Image 1 (spheres, rainbow, N blue to C red):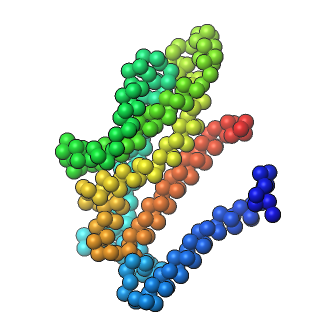
Image 2 (image 1 turned 30 degrees about the vertical axis):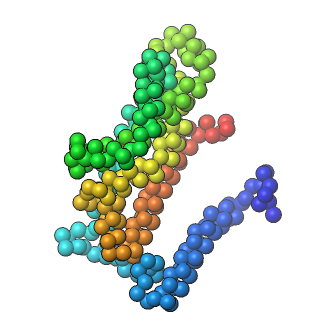
Image 3 (image 1 turned 45 degrees about the horizontal axis):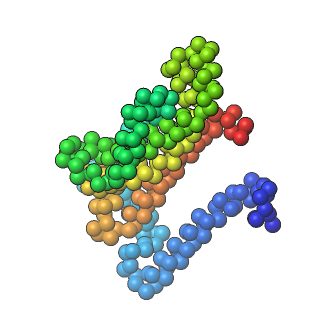
Length: 270
C-alpha cells in the first residue's frame, strides 16, 4: 500500500478507480438518503429520488414549455453567453496587470486603487449597478467583471513583477523596445499561470452570474433555480446545479488541457 508514500505512482486503472470512488460513494449515499426519506414520507420533495429527477430533466431538457421553449437549453444559452462575454473581458484585466508589473508609472497609478477596489464586496454594488444600468444584461456582466477583474489584475501584476529583472535588462540591452519586452519576454512567461488563475476563478464568475440572474433576469440557469425554489422543485434544482457544475468543470478542463498543450515545455521543465 503506497497510499501514504510520497514517491508512490498509482497506475492508470488505480487512478481511474480512485477518481470515481468518491462520485460513486456520493451517489450511493444520496440514493440511500432519498430512499429512507421516501419510506417515511412518500411525498417528500426535499430529497427527490433518481426517477423523480429524471422526470424533472425530461420536463426541462426535452419537453417544450408554454412558450414553445425547451427551458434547459434556453437557460444554458443565456447564461453561457454572459459567462463567455465576461471571460473574454478578462483579457483586458491581464493587459492592465501586465503593464502594472512592467511599467513603474502604471504601477504607481493603479496598484493602490485596484487593491482597494478588490476588497469591495461586489454583491454590495449590485443595487447601484441596477440603478445605473437597469435590469438588463449590462448590470449582470458589470457585476461579474467587478467581482473578478481586480483579482486577475493583481495576479498578473505579481507574476509580471516576479520575472527576473535581468531578463528585462537584457532585452532592453539587445535593442528591444519597452512594449517588446512586455509582450515578447514577460507575457509569454506568465501567461500559463494567468490562464490557470482565470480558470480557477470560473467558480467566482458563476457565483456572480447566479446572483445577478436571481435578482433581475427572465432567463438563465440561476434565474430558473430561484424561480422553481418557490415550489420546492428539487427534482429540477438538483439537475440544474449538476448541469452548471458539469459545464464549469468542462470549461476548466478545456483551459487546463490548452495550457498543457500550448505550454508543454514549461510543464516538462517543472
